[in-house]
Image (tube, rainbow, N blue to C red; front, side, top):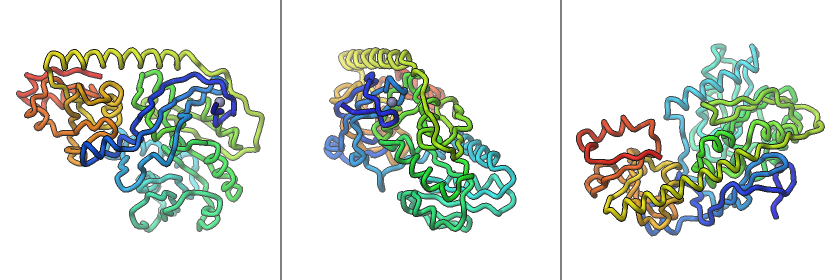
Length: 386
Ligand SMILES: [Zn+2]
């Protein structure tokens, strides 16, 4: 029986279970055979009834294909870029008039560090990032260390940080207190530093029945309460936790503080039960619909080979019996295959030439854009929305 990584209790509700889940939807395969042999993991998502933390109790980090083929850059979306700029301004505002001395843990390719730099006109900032996956060179005002962050690395830094940022990292950590304790220990050298973390909000996932957001790479999921609880537990004082990016993410600002008495309020189980019931019903409805379409001789494609589309076919068509292909406009995804189920990703022209007559849209926001792209040919297609 596992125990909760945050509070060590062992009283759980099961949120979701999948015995053979893809370990990354960001990694597609050249051939169907390769895709069928892709690493599979167990999704065993539990909700801790004592503190409200949600985690994958069967997570095995060695199965996640981080590395050269791992592409997870969202900054090419205008909405997401605006959000990142907004968060960079918040960091700047919290530090006040002093020059920024910022460290980012898990900085990817340094995009956010550059945005932080752009918030200042004085040119006296110093920023550094830590990320083993960084592939670029140093820029004049920032150094990016291709290694994990820790106390020793902070000792080698040429400046004393007044801000420590970590965006979309903690959800990848199996035991979040390890990361928070490492940051706290390192900040013995800079106890005045402010700490800023961003991570998905599990309440948003539950409220929106966003089952595809419970993906294998993310093993730790927080509410505003559990995030604050984890920070207090590691010796921080949360100054505020806010809901950002339309409620999808949480943003916490914290200061180093003495370890104090730490309790959580009773977590809300209703959200969890409602989510599990709604997702089960939703997937059953879709399995029946896909099977009925197939029986009528309709050829079905799913538009969007991102995590949502890949998870949808994994859940509703594991044997690739009903969905002919996924459609994606990204040429890097086309003619490749979804892990485990082996569904092919095609450009839309190919899918229509194959005789696809029904398209399931994973993101209804793009319906008009897709219909105008298809022009006259959209008239012979039935569109359904997830
Ligand atoms: Zn717990």
